[in-house]
Length: 308
Image (cartoon, rainbow, N blue to C red):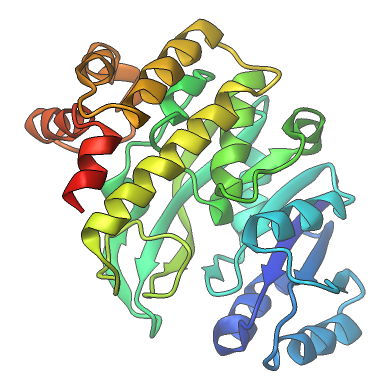
């Protein structure tokens, strides 16, 4: 059976780590390695990892001499994987024990496969909501779907190692899972299965905020930061060597660049409206809500900045 590598990144994760590690080392799939890269933890994370490394021969721990940050740490962990297939893991979730077995049965000719997940609270209590309740899942190879939105969480991913031939370097200012699925949709087919194979922990200091949990920061300042990050991501995606739909992406980037230096960006809003079937496919919203979302793109960065 093909070897599957699980790439796990840790940083000060002692609170939930043992619960997650137990679901990794007890996977039903027999040909497995767990590659862990710790990014300079100051708590008991490394001590916990070393205990598992001494118990399980397929469990390998690496420690960074300096902090790389979330995205670059995953880039390193993936580079250390030896398997023909690679799965990603966060430090605070809980996996179904048949997760890898099911995904290996279902990946077939897809370059990347992902699954649904169940949200749970910080205390591990089910929130009775799934990822598919808040995102539309995509099947196919149209990378335009992932320009403005993402429906694929890292913990849900299994991909073939050949994808590494196309990924290149990760952008330290972007999410690693978004970049991986974007690359996959440019170079092959992606698909999903409806099984909830991970209990996805939600808490206020997580890197992502899918459910829109309240954070302690300025809403207006966040709006500016979101525009800046989105512009940076679109430039990074646009410059990717193996892009499909390149002319489309060039036009979108041009309009977004104009937004960054303008008070109004009606042309950008109209472009998104015309191509809403692709650009807003992932948003699980009513038509009215999508129109409201598009209208926000009519306001230029300079106007947003003036209003802060």
